[in-house]
Amino acid sequence: MYNWKAIITLMLSGGLVACSTTSQVPVEPEQKPQIEQPVVDDSSKADEKDGESSKDPVTEPEKEPEKVEKPAEPEKKPVPPKKPEKVTKTSDGKLILGEEEWVYVPGLEESFKARVDTGATTSSISAIDIVPFERDGKDWVKFKIEHDGIKSQEVSLPVERWVKIKQSSAEGTQRRAVIVANIQIGDLKDKTEFTLADRTHLTYPLLLGRSFFRDVAVVDVSKKYVQDKVKK
Image (cartoon, rainbow, N blue to C red; front, side, top):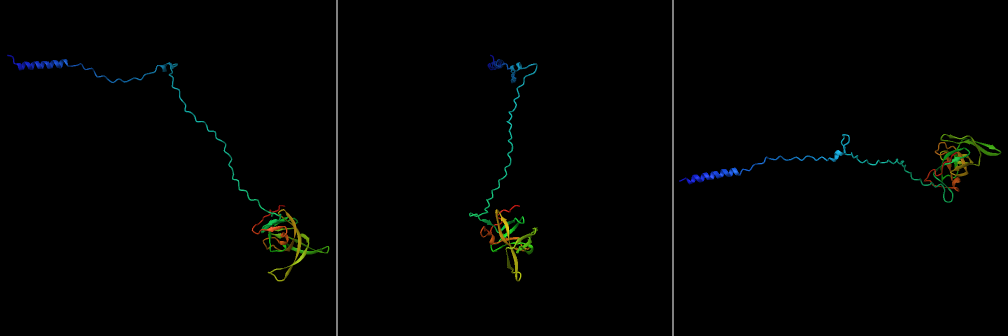
């Protein structure tokens, strides 16, 4: 009797060999990944002329519109504020005088600084080289006016009257001649009396007293040179 165990073993081993032979499936070789090639548009070749390939047109950047510079405007200078109009007369037409004014003497063709003195009765003018004399039986006097380097020519005028002046610095009195002279302050031309006296040591060569301005002017001692200086 055959050994059934050996026979079964042989049969099983042969089946396994057959299975292994029949179960082998041919293995396909490993495929490499395909690389896509760029597609060339044939239409671009149609644009080639004389062996030269057409190039894409170069798009120039848009230019900004040129700025037109406006001509520079001339610099405006600041307009100084207008000075208030100077009031030289009162509502009734009288002259306004400050504490100091310019007085023009036509006979001497000179303007002199004058102090307007409300405390003095008569005006006075600086005179040197005073010499009294007679003409046609009347008293006359000749003199020169000198002050601050201004020296006039010799002037001869009739004496209106004589006055006696008592000075506190000297004993006794002095006899002084009073003359009448034409003067101009602003647009006012008038004549007034002047006492002749040496005022070279004083600040003002002329002093205007009440006998001049009491009827034609008012005095504001807080102001100076209200009236314009008369030009020659």
